[in-house]
Amino acid sequence: MRRMRVAAVCGAAVVTAVGGVAPAAGTPGAVRGAEAGLAYHGSAGIVGERVDVRFTPHNHGAAAVPDSVVRIRWSQPLEEGQTLPARCAPEGDRAVRCRVGRLGAHDTGERIGLRVRLREAPTEVLLEFDPVGSDGTVDESRAAAERQRVLVLDTGDTYYF
Image 1: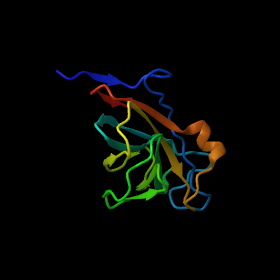
Image 2: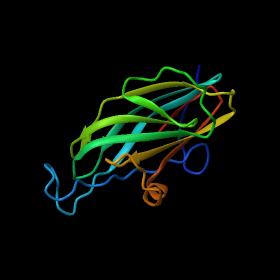
Image 3: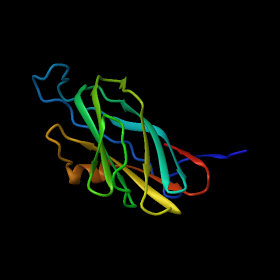
Image 4: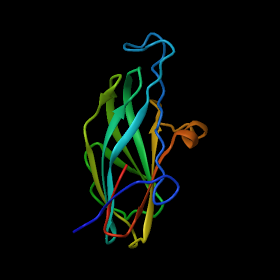
């Protein structure tokens, strides 16, 4: 029977809630002084040279997010030329961006599933989820504090975050 493991802090995995940016004043759905609270909950596992990741975006905050994108980075390079879901696109050799779309306050988005192949079979891989701004950039100073990380070991287990 396959064992299931829950991501743990500073050991097999580090999970940090990812905060987002509240819409600007005057934006429909904006709440003055309120912030979005983006987080990604799901599972990941290594199968040979492949990493299976499934996650659902959640906005735990009091402000809506008009259009959300998440960048997922892998600590290992991805194999070139693989097929990704329609809402996802490669970014360099170690990252993928996926459009999450609009998330209302205290809302849950659609589940996203990725199956990516790595160039080499890893013994472990670190996944990092970063919120991407509406202009397509990642504010590295903010993302460093709010980044959601999951360390997945090649144990045959599924890691939940």
